Amino acid sequence: MRRNRSLLISANALAAAFVFSACANQPLPPLAQIDFVPTPALTEQQSLNVLADISATLESAAEARDPELLNSRVYGPALTVRASQIWVAAVRDDDSLITVIPDTYQQLIIPVTDYWPRPAWAIPAVTDQLQPPRLLAFDQSGPRDPYRLWGWVQLVPGVTMPAFNDPRVGSEEVPADDASLKVSPQEAVAQYAQLLATSGDSPYAANFQPQADDPFRDFLATWVAAQQEALAGERVEGTYTLTVQPAEGNSVRAVRSADGGAMVLAELFTSEQLQAVAGAVLAPQTMTAQALLYGQEFTNVLTAEYTDMIALYIPPAGSPDPITLLGYSHIQTGAGVTLPESQYEQYPEPTE
Image (cartoon, rainbow, N blue to C red):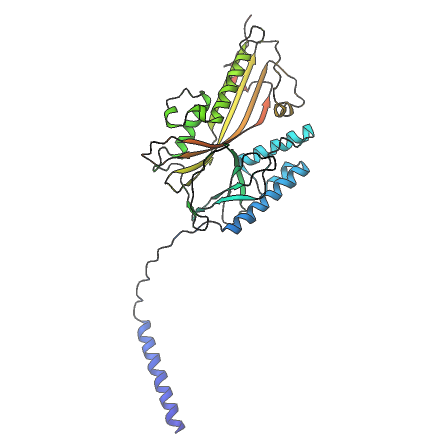
C-alpha cells in the first residue's frame, strides 16, 4: 500500500515537472502596460519637516551672525539676501533689518513632478509684527540632496492668491517656456523687468495690471524720479541709470493654479548708478547701503546692487485678465563708490 502511494506521488511530481518544463519553453505573454500617475513630490508632513530644518538653519545663522551656516539649507537668491542681511546686522550690531520668516505655515503648495529639481512653496503665518505673509520657494536639486530655501517674497497687502490643488493631490509644475498661458513664465518675467526699468513706459504695459495697482512698480518709479531730481540741481548735477533684468540660470519657478493659470516666482538683478560732477560727494541714503559701504570713502559715484524676487500670477491663454503682481522682495545686497570698469566710457568725467 505504501509502495503504491509512493508511486502515485512520484507520478504526480513527474507530471508537474513535465508541465512546468513545457511551459518554460513557451514565450511569456507581454507585460500589461501600466499608467504611472505622478504623485506629489512631498507629503504635507515631509514639507513641514523640511521647513522646520530650514527655519532652524536661518535662526542659528542669524544668532551666530555667520552666513556660512546657511549653506546646508539655503541657496540662490535667498542665500545672497540672507548673507547680506547678516553682514549688515554685524556691521550695525542690530538684527532689525533681517527678514522675519515665521516657522508656522498657513498654506503648502506641493507640485506633482517626477524629475529634479523638485520645487515646493509655502506661505508662513502672519508675523508677530503683523507684516503681510511671505511666499517661500524651496526645492531639491537631486534625489540625494536636501531641500533648500531658494527665495521668498512678501505678498502684496490684501492680494487675492490663486487657488491650488490640495497638497495631498498636488499641483502641476509649469516649465518656464510653457505656452498654455497668456505669456510664458520666462517671457512674463522679462516683460515685467522692462516695466520696472522704464517706469512703465513699455509696449508690454497692456499685459499687466495698471502701475497704480502694483506697489513694486509704483515704489521703483517714485524712487527713480527722486534720484533723478536730486541729480538735476546746479551743485550736484549728474546722471542716474537703473538696470533691471532677469537673473541668469535657473531663476524662474512656476506652478499651475486651479483655473489653468500659473503662479511664477523669479529672481531679478537690479542695479543703479549715480554719478555727480567731479568734487561732489554722494552719500548713501539707507542704513543697508551705509553698512554695505562700511570702510569705503565716499566719492562722486555711488553704485548699488539689489537682489529682487517677484511673484506673478499669469492667466491662462485667451484670458482677458492682466498679469498681476502677488508679491516682491527688493533687498540691496551690494554697494560701491566707483563705477564698474566696463562703465567708465559710458560715464566720462564731466568737462569744465
